[in-house]
Length: 144
Image 1 (cartoon, rainbow, N blue to C red):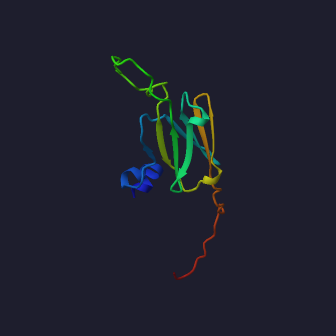
Image 2: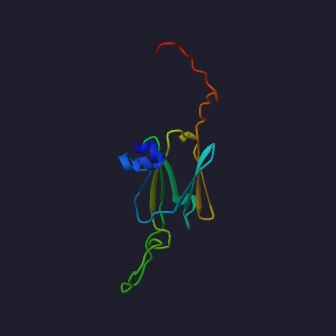
Image 3: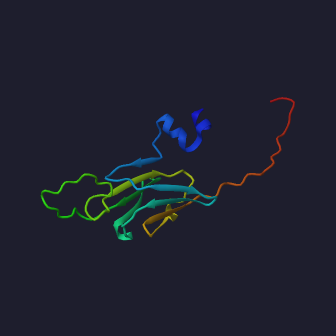
């Protein structure tokens, strides 16, 4: 019932199914998830990361896992005290990991990723929906 009221993706949160977003690591990059008629488009903030610093993988069939590895911690004087470390440690990049459960109707073998100006764009093509006729006649009988 909640699945039909709340639908995808919200029903999964209520009924204990695997969450749409699973996050873990030092920092969590911001994410926009858009859907067009032909694809899902994910835009993830990855400032300071090059394409060589980022890995995009498919795990368990439909889990998109995005990982980034930043630089090592800067050599600081022993008396240096960190008060806030929101940008990661060292060169400001830090490490991150983000896993996103993709819907069932995607073509995982055709996923493409591109990073430019601190934004990683992941294009996830969708399977073509089966076309059903707009009008379907139902036979009427006197008994069921």
